[in-house]
Amino acid sequence: MSVLLLYIVALGVSAIVLLLVAITGFGATSLEYRILSGFGALASAAYAFYLAFQFQGGRYSFFYGALLLPVYASYKLYTGFRRRELDRADRRAAKAGRKAADEWRSTRRW
Image 1: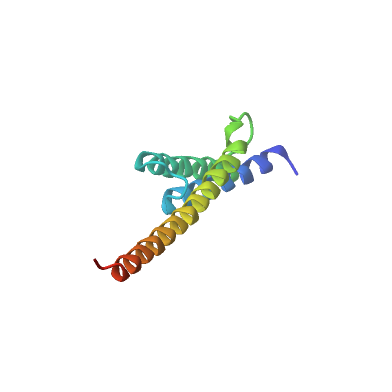
Image 2: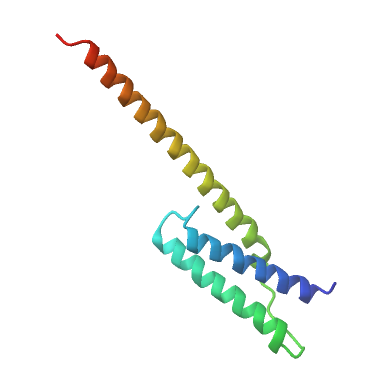
């Protein structure tokens, strides 16, 4: 497997993961991060398409970040899903606490 083919696959994976971050918003701390993820996905996909179908040989730019970006974006997705689950658990616990407090108050009428 050539280095160029491996690089094209890495760019494609980067584009898919960044697109997932942009669409779902998990792991994104702000709207700006989601927009940047969308632009990064578009740029990665465009460069992968160019290298796969338009490139005729010669020199090409190799961005090492394209190899590390899927790992970082996957970590951000994981932390986003994890944070979402923790937020759900906190909301359930708060709801149960309010219900218990309401029941206690209803039995303690002065």
